Image 1 (cartoon, rainbow, N blue to C red):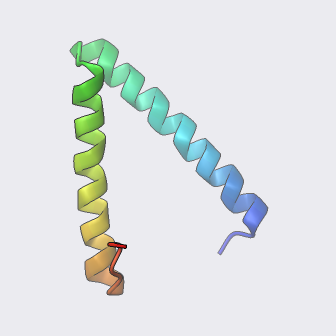
Image 2: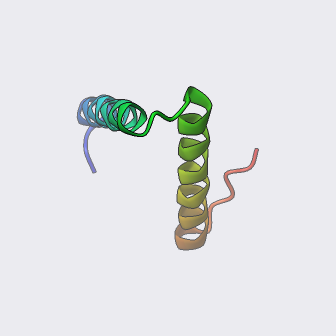
Length: 61
């Protein structure tokens, strides 16, 4: 696994890439901010389910 500094850099890069993808999607589809937020929430739900299923982790606090 990446050391903490590498992990921070990777997270920052992922954030910037996702931000660019969402901006491009919004510009091309004329989606509202709420529609983009809803899409990201739905993707997060799918990702959480995959984490739960694959690693037996309960992300609910």
